[in-house]
Amino acid sequence: MPVAAASLPVADGVGLPWDVETRDAVEAIGAARRRIGDTFVVESGRDHYLFTFSAAGVESFYALPEESASKGLADYLMLRRKLPEELFAGRRTLPGTLFRRDDVTSYLANLERALDHTDVELGERGEVELFEMTRRLGHRMGLASWAGPGCSDGTAFERLVAAFDALDGSDAFVHPDAMAAIAASDKRAERAALEEVVAVVGDALARGESIAADSLFGRVVGAWADEPAEVRTRGIALDVALIHIASMSNLMAALGWALVDLIGHPDVAARVVDGDTGLASRCALESTRLAQRSIMSRAVVTPVEFDTGDAVIEVPAGWTIATLLPLLNTSAAPGLERWAPDRWNRYRLADTRVLDSPMLVTAFGHGKHSCPAQPFSLSAMTTAMIRLLSRYEITPQWRRYPRPVPQQIGGVARSRDECRVEYVRFGHAEGRS
Image (tube, rainbow, N blue to C red; front, side):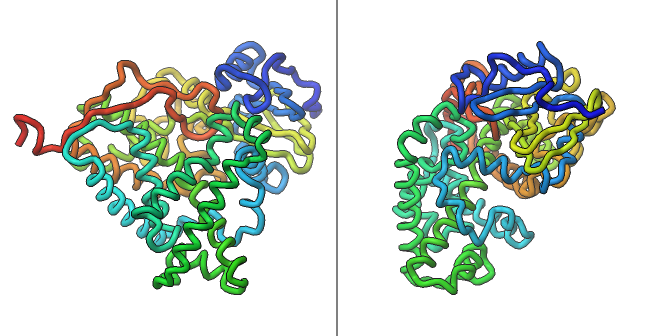
């Protein structure tokens, strides 16, 4: 017979980091799993979370229908801790529409141009923080793709970089411990940054430059064509803001980790530079798998019966069903804690026989809720890895492998440690041809 979720064991003393002070959010949930087992409840603030880690539970998780247990609502409830509510209201162009084939072709062309800018900024030799470099690269590529004429260069670009760094929605899960202070300020800094985006995008529109109707920015502009000028400008700018916030930060963090791993494996990096794009893609998948800090969650809208293998659980509306990728990705079979890109075959693990379920390990999710940007993301990461590693001899300045931000519970890991590298462009290093 089904059992009530409220009757399940509770992880006493465990809360999520936006509600309670937590030194390491992922470790706290992992410790609860070791004590209690694969199915338990976390009571955090006023919310109830049913965590599941069994093979049957994870399969049931990915099979949940959106209309009953919503990923979209769960994502919104997390992001609204950081982002102003007005950013979500009335949007006419959503991030889910970003990855048509012709759009992706234009994004990759913009990536090449952004890499050209990176070459200029880096110069012949110097030192740079790796994740700052990849974040800036992502801003330039994204803003060239959907933010309007002139927004990826010069003063307009620098203004938008500063605004989007302040408006970064990923802070909701990278620095959840900061959300109480943000709420107390009524999101003052975030609202000011959003107004800066409106001003810069408004300037781009006012210049009156030709905008291709079939480009993504052209489609955003077209969606607001029936509105008065002031409403139109603001609507376009907020569409652009939500698209950019939803699209870039995790991708460029994953690129940073892929570069960290390749720099640490020069034999593999040499094969990537020689043009082995299949290996480059496998490296990107493997680094993303290991860098995952994602809490995968579904907000229960209508009561559901949830099968964990040992029991069928009645989960009421208002609860959240969740699992944690960093725990599953490294514990579902022996050896998964090691970086080994050849464990992948295209987008899937080459050998899943050692797993109780193939769904226990992932880089981009499973089923209908897998990331729609996966093909683009891997193409972009592969392009950037080959370009940067083939142009520069890169020497890491870190003494130990970089660690993730301990409070982070969501998205691809951000590094708590500075990841500075020294670089010299090939052909300019002493003794090199």
